[in-house]
Amino acid sequence: MKNSTTSNSRPNQTTVPAYPEHPELHSRRLRRAWLEEAEVLMRSGCELDARGEAVLFKAMHGCAFEAAAAQRRGRAVDLQHALERHQRIQEFLVDRNIGLVYEMRRRAHVVNVDSDDLNSEGFWTLVQSVLHFDPWRGYKFSTYACTSILRSYLLLAKKTRRRMGRFDLLKEEVDPRSMVAMLQSDLDTQEMVARLRKVLRENTARLTATERFVIERRMLHAPTEKAETLESIGEKFNLSKERVRQIQLLAIGKLRASMERFVGERREAVDGSSSPNGATPYHRRRGVSGGPDFAATSSGGAAAGAGPCCILAA
Image (tube, rainbow, N blue to C red; front, side, top):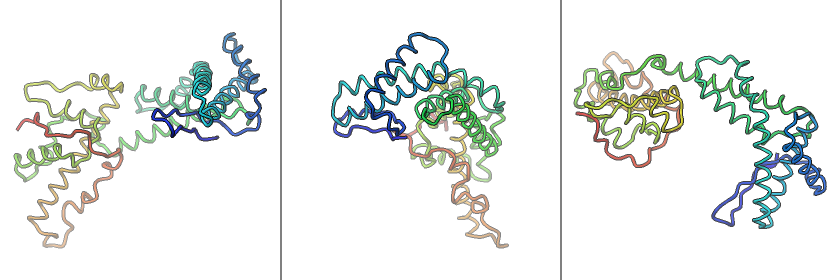
């Protein structure tokens, strides 16, 4: 499969879809014949047989081949026309095979995964399968796509189980304002609140922009206001309720890790680098110095424009 290419000579770069390397693609006569037959098949709306399906895929890859050639030669008009034809055939193939997503979802029997997440994963995998299917290998597209979709469902289920194993809170609703109480232990409450404010202000917990938004809407509202629901936050990001709840738990895990480092440092400062009986200090026993395992499961990175968080009540 030849990688997609981009034009580096223009500010608005155009991405050319990938296509498999095959000698037939270099024949202009064959490319024209595939495209003409593909147009007839798409207009007719009849059921596709194996040959018609292969012709459509060959025509789509032929358009990608012509788009790459036009891009190398700097022919913007030819490039645009080739990309439009490629997009039209791709959308037709996706629409004709969209039932594979629901069929594989029924066969997979995936549990503990939100239905919206399954649909999103299945649709994305179907589109990628259409783009990367090689019709010259001789097997049907449904065989290739079903295998890819099932594999994506299994990987998604595995990630979800791993996430549920890392978070004991995943099966129950979290009281967001209980985090300070859980962490304060023998330390002063006001000191913990001040530390939490500092963590959010400096973003030492490395929350992403989405995680910070969820935390602010769910945890850091004024005492007189009600926390925003998971459903309403999900509508803003086009995410399911379950996915927003998972993002909230990831953010809480990062905040808790940062707060536990502070607790461990304070206890080590008070008790010394080791206890009198030679036991390992608290934060080294818990592995907080390197960050707990769940802190590495989400993509870190400071949230853009992370300023002072003034809505946390003292």
